[in-house]
Image (tube, helix red, strand yellow):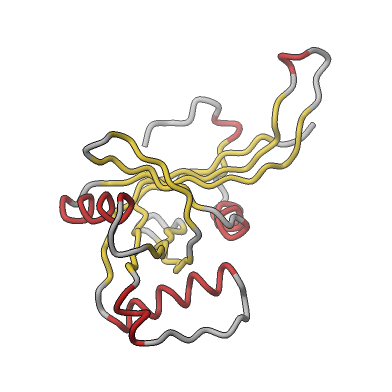
Length: 170
């Protein structure tokens, strides 16, 4: 990835980067299809691994209908081995200024690139859906019928590049 312009805002601590991801409830996917660029917010689950350089590398789990624009775009990128974009952020409040253009926003954000994989194995689908439930509603009962597992589309996004950025309140 390109170097961050304001390096002082880059989140370089692995545990801090991981905590930003864990605190977010919405993941935005940046996809490309025949109609153009497509951004879609989704809820997600996470499995953590460590990359070759010792940094946290999430695998995000998503679900969708088996067809539609999101599923078509994910499937096309999966077949092509193309990277897709991921983004998530936390609003940490307004930074007041002395005049209109000196106001800003305190935030923490994560951006990255990943490879989408369509999951078809029922056991792996169940694992991914359980990870989504654990992130969205920790401790909630998790069971899935065979019919639900057959019907739902499940995707794993293996993140290959991940950066974090923050602007702290004054």
